[in-house]
Length: 66
Image (tube, rainbow, N blue to C red; front, side, top):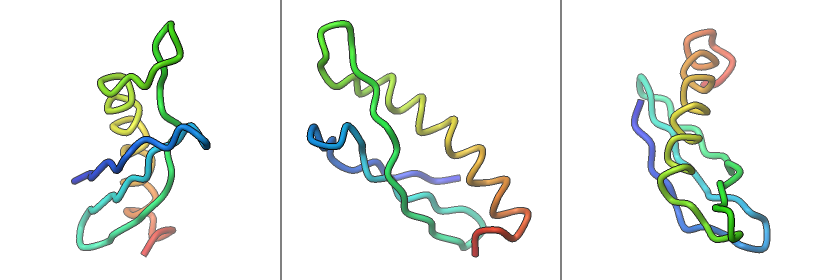
């Protein structure tokens, strides 16, 4: 699974992500992580995107995302 994370959108609290797996490309917004001060936490968001990627990979394998 390859992921490409876009720029944090403070208005929506999300980052756009492009997931690419087995020739399938899937774009979706993922909720970003914030630190204790309400600032965008890039490392924690990367970890969250990795977790979401597992679900995306399962959906691709099941044929639910093509």
